[in-house]
Image 1 (cartoon, each protein chain N blue to C red):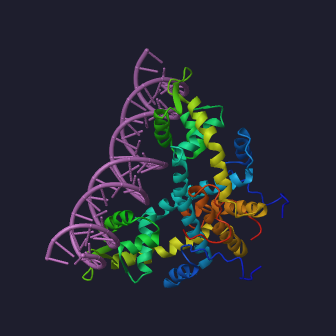
Image 2: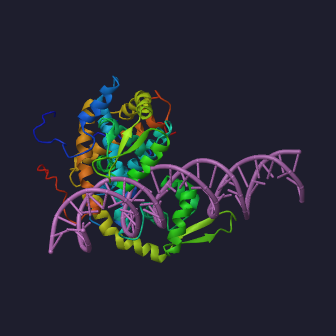
Amino acid sequence: MNNNNKIINDIDAIPSLVQSKRQIDRYNLDIDAQAILVASRLMAAGAKLGHASEIHFSRFGLSTGRYRLLADLEDNEGEELPSQLAEHLGVTRATVTGLIDILERDGLVSRRSSSDDGRQRAVILTEEGAKKLREMAPEHFARLEAMVGLLNIDERSVFLDLLGRVTQGISALTGELGSKPKGNISNE
Amino acid sequence: MNNNNKIINDIDAIPSLVQSKRQIDRYNLDIDAQAILVASRLMAAGAKLGHASEIHFSRFGLSTGRYRLLADLEDNEGEELPSQLAEHLGVTRATVTGLIDILERDGLVSRRSSSDDGRQRAVILTEEGAKKLREMAPEHFARLEAMVGLLNIDERSVFLDLLGRVTQGISALTGELGSKPKGNISNE
DNA sequence: GAGATATAATTAGGTGCCTAACTATATAAG
DNA sequence: CTTATATAGTTAGGCACCTAATTATATCTC
């Protein structure tokens, strides 16, 4: 379990444990240095992944957000309202408007006014948009799978579990100080 | 181990496993749905954390990047070259210039021309900058620690290990298709 | 109906980070 | 010495996403 002969993650990751410890010691804080290390590494990983993701999707003339919008459309019979898209993607409606603008310019989606509610403008996945998704699927999913290829099946389950709990903990950054997200899921 | 009575990560996370599976089935791809789920969840977590981080640092009048720059300065006796900062932070020199511009405007760092090399302009952590770090340290580190508070000590080690390997795998998104990440793990 | 209020989408403007081009200085080659 | 090349930092312009304000439509209350 804790024998450090083989599975050390001494990848040249930033920051190191000593670096975290030094920061904490400087102010005599009663904080677990490894906790800080986990948090910092996750931040670094998130930033790296975000950047890599943009590079990945740019190969297909898309951005991360625009791909996610197309994929969500595909998952919903090719038609959704901007507000639904915003909800599903976890971004604002303003952001969705911007994504649609470019996708429409490139012919991957189109807008259609609703007869039910004059305020609504449904977004439609065009045939060209569907074709784009079809064409990129093999490479896209192969790369995603390769990304976690260094983890075996069991490790993937463990990672999902741990990542899920850390994700819950992210609210500690934004919420009230001292309010623990304990066991129960706080679906804000 | 695989009894699903307690440790289910049914956090309302997006996407779900069925969602990932549906996408793969649509194109008859030979891909492990859980691998896609791990990749997607990590992307979502990274984005969420990045956003939360900006909110966190904005409480102190900083951004994530500007805090990291200040902290790195503090770790290097309060003086560094922009190129060193760029290296340490993993961003471009252009980005560092922008970060310094605002930090200097706010009086947290200053620039000083070098006598050795006329091209260099050292960045200095001002007393006000050091004070800012000192003041925010308790809350900052407490929040980071709270973020991983749902993981016990052992789980943190495991998470670090797994995260490290997935981080290595990120190169699968940007590199040559089919080229395995160099970290040669022998337990496959 | 008329006004107040709610909602859908958009526009306007801002932040963070990027790439590529540029300026100024240093160094190497002839 | 002069010209070519490399390097440090900055500037210019772009993308993704945000918040706040705006426009247009719907609905509720009188």
